[in-house]
Image (cartoon, rainbow, N blue to C red; front, top):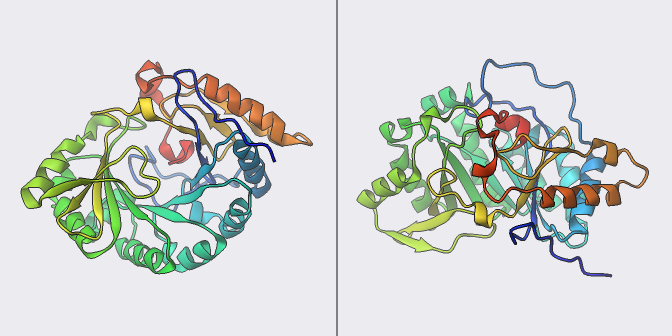
Length: 326
């Protein structure tokens, strides 16, 4: 079996990570992800399980070996476990992870782990029940907590929690202290993420404010990140079993280390999150032998990947995250 040649873009970045959105549908309605009024979900998801497998085969043939399944909310796909099992069986796959809002995770964490899922990221913007319900348009924070514990029991590791800093309210509610207490009681990794200009950039809060607050409460020890650490910088609070991290796309962009491509649930291949540019994979997916056609389009996307998101003129008109894929 031949070894794939590493895929490198025009500025020397190795591209080995692909995020695949399984659906635009979601059972929550977070303002920074779904701008505007709540609307009915699309009638169906464009990408089939076979489509996803063919995309993965093409990517693996180009040495893209790390996949993340996103949405929308991927747990709304009833065939999710089957997709995971088929992906994990592909030769060369090094990492398979999932991003979820956690509402349904308690009931499916074990079946996902049994299917072969390796790790999970849980979106959780507040541990306060009332605030969480407001942020998410009616979400149940206790369901997310149960999902988090179920993921740990199922052996999904690492378990990461994504907290979007969409406004200063996270400070007013004392959420930072609550999340600090969480990583001191459980081996989870909480990452505070600066809100990106995908919808409304008015609520931007720099991650440095969070770190300053944590330093007033605890000694922060910089540590290497867990598996799949990506662009986050991590810290341990004393001898805590978990860590806190910050992801700073606005205050300290990490474009020079970007190693990813994205595929939307509509079959659009995006070389950069902050661009409206995309390549339609659907015609290639409908070919009798789709894999080589998809591979050619992946190569095209890598060649067109901008060096920095600041080079993208369309930055202020990006679609909602549930459409792009989280």
